[in-house]
Image (cartoon, rainbow, N blue to C red; front, side, top):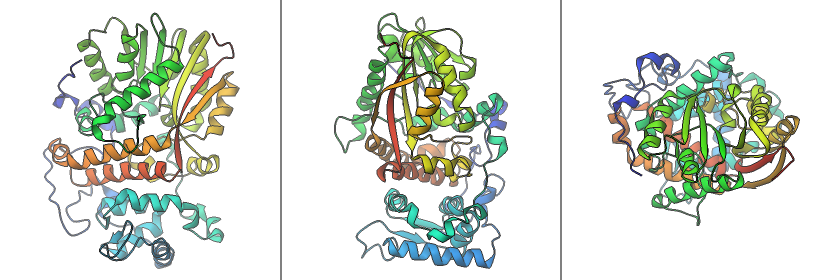
Length: 441
């Protein structure tokens, strides 16, 4: 199968640009020069909270300098890179660095990196060390004061039908060409399943097919199967299911993904077997022998998990099977994250929340579903993210050519390294689950 050429038509268009926040939107023709001065040359209209440090009391800044400074020292993350045996975090502007953290915690930490106020010889390594010790960074007595320095999630990020379309657009409609710059030829944007670790980038395509095939096998997708996919991506799973003889209905809220998925499906000669619908999962029609949803639940939001599992159950024909791939975190961590506006929710996945295995089990059971298989592959996601990050870093000129300014690649690299650290540290996992209504066939 040949892949259709990606063109400028996949860049954000005026009619949906309002759904993409100015922080993430590329500026056509942007030529912001790189600068050795942190914050210099940053467009304050596009990146208002990055262009300048926030106002913060001397007390907050001092507390950050004391706590963060001691933590970095204790974890051996400071000092000369020449004499260090592990990853090193180098602060270029200590005042701005501590003001941001003192005012906005982890959001400020990420924004400080975006502003160029700190760097690392091994960004993923630094973030992995921090993730491994996340519960030790703040003394226990001060953790009870958490509500004083964390922000609540914006009400505008709720995943109502209109809100879900906006939230999906703000990430997935940035540019198909952006994602093609660092993904493998399958354009699969979820954890792969490798035969051996560590892996090379040229093994990623096979690893993505291995992951997809395992999910299709779990759902017993074959000749004549009526398959519903919730979350199209760029169409690779639908293509492989259709090649098995399935009749596929696949849903997405991303107009950019839908357009390219349809082109790829037509190019493969499978348009008669696959229908791509711009449709919310809450508006599913018909009954299906199998349902597959890959890393879609993270975009649903806790408020709507009951509706998500009810929709899955309603879509399932008697004896049908549901195969899910889901990122998970610990239940206590999930409850804290659910109440907090995070750097990821602000800049990368508005409205998103990673569930715990307990939350999945409880909500699916309440909808009348039973978990009959559950396996984890967190180390494979860490490897997938490493390969994406290295590919993205090596192709920064291609990203710049799409019109993204200098802040965007720092944001994206931080996002990929931050995610990789979550899996390497064990803070996050990725699960493949099989759910049924209890009448397996």
